[in-house]
Length: 367
Image 1 (cartoon, rainbow, N blue to C red):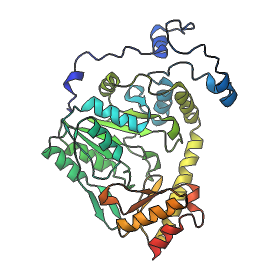
Image 2 (image 1 turned 90 degrees about the vertical axis):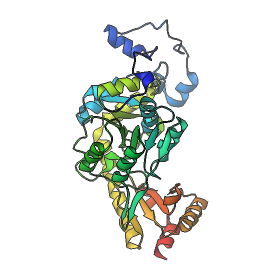
Image 3 (image 1 turned 30 degrees about the horizontal axis):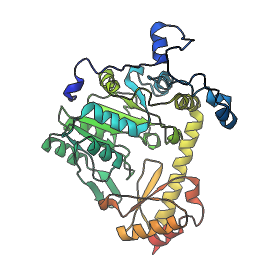
Image 4 (image 1 turned 90 degrees about the horizontal axis):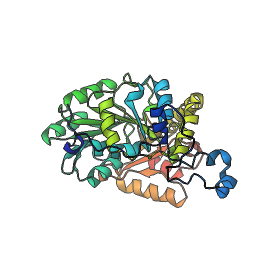
């Protein structure tokens, strides 16, 4: 079984402030008079009311539910995930940091693909971990994390954790469920797999066969930023066995997800038809955008996300295109890692399909 840091394996640390909502559930009644809370409960909020309205203000007085029960209940029902297998936090980024705090100590080795979502490496190095980065597999039409290389590095370097984004950010590549199972089996028994599924809503297959499952030795991360359009509010969730989530709760910021964020997430989750409509529209735009650039002769990478990647002949050309578009007020993503600096990433929003919007890129790929 994967290991936890030694300082977490005892009774503590214990959250000293579980919060009003958790306490109400424990005692089985509403707490109507909060005389022991040092929140600004009697702030009139005239300015906020004038600017946003009374409905918003009602969510700002008290700390959010530390267990985010309402969000977890909705995700549990929609995705058939047991409630006790879910933990809500302030977006996938916060969950990455939380997973690292739960599983790794300074000086321990973690493994991820060189050039994959850079926030993982940022948090890992900030925690004092040693970062080992095998390269992507590159071939015509392929830019994919090398699962065999990740497993080999985990064994060679005695890694505590391996990170994989699936679908991958920034390449868009999707590994099959069987490949994920094979990777978990290939890792050392005491090594964690941190599986970042932030773009999982956009995969073209029927969805993961383990969508509602907590997998042994795996911490899965998902987000409401993309398919649910809540990036600015920061809310995501982890899927793992209850004993893993209990460890994560030991080092989690108590009130990381605000009352308003939870309320907004609940409203969006209560309207799944709108979410499905949004996902289908993104997929259609993604395919239209890919077909357009393929017709121009571009090397368009297959994508199971809400973006496409275009691989240009050189990093210099990609930098030139990026700067030309930026000068026109158009921001596309040029991948930061030196090995991937020739890749331009475009989000499949409607503006990307407007004639002439990406003229500098169109000229570069058709030259």
